[in-house]
Length: 79
Image (cartoon, rainbow, N blue to C red; front, side, top):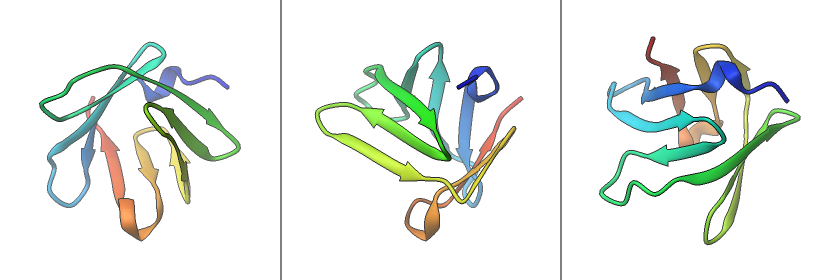
């Protein structure tokens, strides 16, 4: 899948705090441990490969907006 549009910093839509950054084929969480994790986007599911593989089904998946259920919230992309 073309993931070029995912590149950049993503914010929590409610708090406007950085949640993660996507650069190349890696995702970086906004935490003290800023280690790159591989990710994949297929069939409206964001999969992140770390110590554990985590799947986030996306209710909304479009340029500048990702929504992953109530538990994970809505993320907005920064320019």
